[in-house]
Length: 69
Image (cartoon, rainbow, N blue to C red; front, top):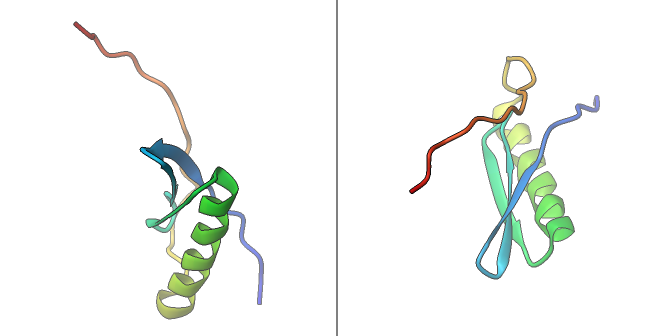
């Protein structure tokens, strides 16, 4: 069994924090950022046990501008 490093994108929605793994597509939530990431890790491990690791490169994060009124 190997180890793979994945990304977690975390944002707040109301009272909860939502964590998403862009490489796999799994999403979870928690009361704190740490809890959200821990739940995401568990959800991702279960997903990978069932469906295997996706093939593809690591995503990257960038920024862009939008006009706001």
